[in-house]
Amino acid sequence: MDEISQQAIKVFKALADPVRYRIIQLLIEKGELGCAEFAEVFDISAPALSHHYRILEEASLVSTRKSGQYVFLSLDEVVLDKFIPGFEKDHIRQ
Image 1 (cartoon, rainbow, N blue to C red):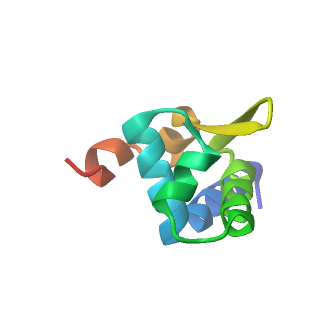
Image 2: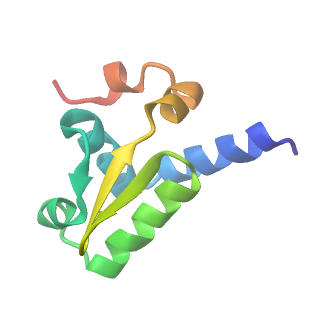
Image 3: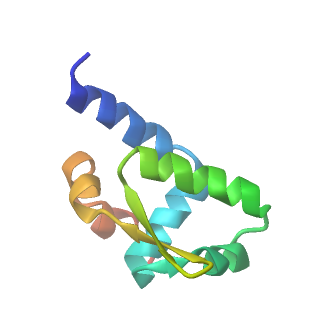
């Protein structure tokens, strides 16, 4: 299997989970967000959220940035648009 197919599978698997799908929606709606902000939205443990961040990062959908003890996530719109063109238009609550 070629590299693009492998990445596509990672992207689609990552977005198949409702928590990760919502994380992507939030990043589109609000831009870069800190992990603490996601903890306010989701009623799941910090290790569970960390697991979701890692899957999104492995799919190249998000990148993380550390600032002191805080971690921030940002969306890689190029990767998202490459595999799901129009995601923002079709999947964001208006």
